[in-house]
Length: 369
Image (cartoon, rainbow, N blue to C red; front, side):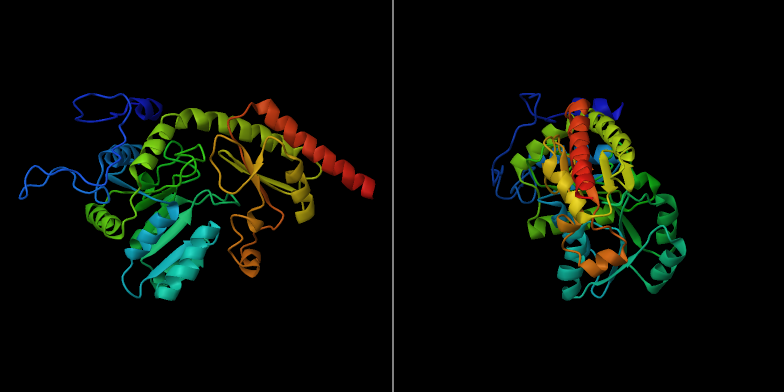
């Protein structure tokens, strides 16, 4: 069955005697037990909830995973990964990583004893050297955010396997409809479901998907022990968002392609990068980039991406501001880089809005000369 059909035709409430077409929200903390000595299917929502079970089954199906787990945020999913690392263990991460992930690893996990390191995953010789030193997990994004660099997953996965290192891929940007990292050798797939999976900027959620049964059991134990599972209402919001994922992505990708083409023709723009629904561009000046954003009317200046509404941001001053300036320079992350996340608006409206902003700023700069 095509994923677009699976998103809509997935069983909304397996076993429910009333056969609802939409998954019910089991907004309850506890469940009555049939007997003091015999437990029921569920007992406490922190440990399990029917709404969450349906969501996790659908996410596992989409990712081609045996199990999927949902969390209160993407950061909660990342935090759980660090719990899988033995005392004194080491986590490597790609050198182009979301600022919040960098902050958690370097400023929360590292002070608690986790050893960390970073490497360009496309520099296979450097990766081999780092893996030879020893690493329990390698965390990467592909494409990366916001530089939109694509990683050779098959090559990286092969080297991780050879060194006994588990590969974690953040698939937030591509979604399971465009990329399935587990099929390419990843051990774990992570999502900020706040982005495309939810798609409406109305919930925060994280996802982990895995095939290894022992790893899955450990994740389930930690999720329950730490109380980081997604609540029933947010599970329902995410289930609702998933139904239109394929439609949203198609329109967002059309819009992004049109915006990228427009930017490439602008004399203000020095470089354009694009992947999926994201378009990033540079102007050579933070002031010029900021001036363009201030003039946009169909784009909201906001962090995050993947919503039905188009957004615009300066990552170095917003989503990646937690990475120190010297570290950003070492990663060659341009301070003037603008990230556009295309929404589902009419393509012509977005293009006209961006064009008027570019022309207005270009005219002002010309007059200033």
